[in-house]
Image (cartoon, rainbow, N blue to C red):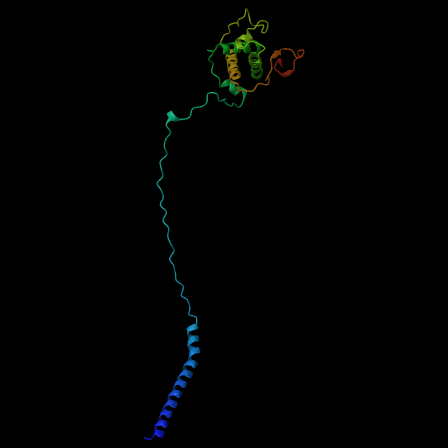
Length: 217
């Protein structure tokens, strides 16, 4: 084969290879957008069902109530004043014991001076005696105030007459206890004097008029 023929054959072969390569490149370029579009097509998302979570709460056993030992129960304060709905209820709640000398003196004054008066009037007489004992101007005790010379006409020779233990005496004792315990507010608070008249004593301020007595300070 001559040089020219060999050269022509080589050239033809190169041209064929170049054409084949060009055809392959063009085909790939044409198919590429379709492949990209196909890959970009959205696929439906399948929802995943998640089962609900159950929580277990352990309930603690209930503790039985513990009974309080009476030995450790709080004690009532001896100084606490009981609230009564009425003066009559306060009087009725008192016992009849008279083992205290000051109580007997106070009850004696109530009995002799006001046993026919309403309960409020009897309490007011007791209030006068206790106010005097606390004033610093009279004797310092109920017995001292009651037996002080020239103060109460029922006192004989510095002593209080004996009293039969009848219903009025028991009421006088109960009223005296109410007064000494300060279990009811008297209408004659701060009064230091009383009399059976309606005319005011000179120089005194009238506090209250209860039953047949007028009270002053």
